[in-house]
Image (tube, rainbow, N blue to C red; front, side, top):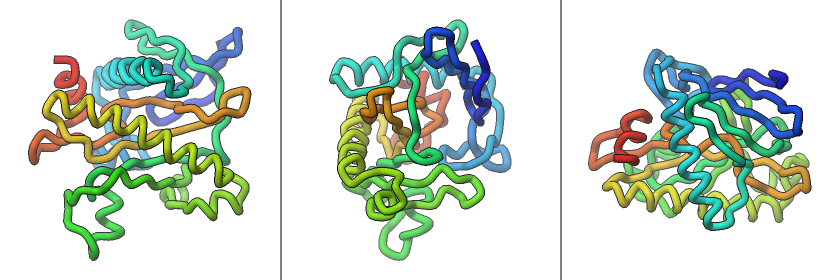
Length: 226
């Protein structure tokens, strides 16, 4: 297999059969040693974080498969901390799609004049460009279409898939007495050009609370499978 990309939290390898192997790392995003799912830099390394993230990802991707929601997932190996996936083409240089159920994080920083911290939101979906230099700016549907990144039809599909996937995760969390505040997802096109969920679904790309208490990623995995 050939290393094609070394990311913040995963290394990406191309396999001889055309599939892709993701090797999960123990690095997590954040700043000044504090975890932040929306950060653009690796903030800290937590032993076991890679396996924890993969275990959650495997669980949720298999849940989505049961509901015939398209993803790149093929198989996972918890011992090797790897996941085999279908190859995908990203939109532009990559998009992040956030589904927000509560006003926290960058949403609160931008719109705090009009909302209170933790205020309930109705599965609000926003798209940002993966662009560290410009701090992942939000982008509208019209801008995506006019810049040739995503068509209006694809945007609607992306928005619908984001809400469906996020509700699956939210409901799973609720069964454990947990409250999903927001979740960050990534999508790409499969070899036939269809939109599918890519990357991961883990504690590292969501904010979850138990009452008023924020739950860190590795503790979240333990609570979810307890």
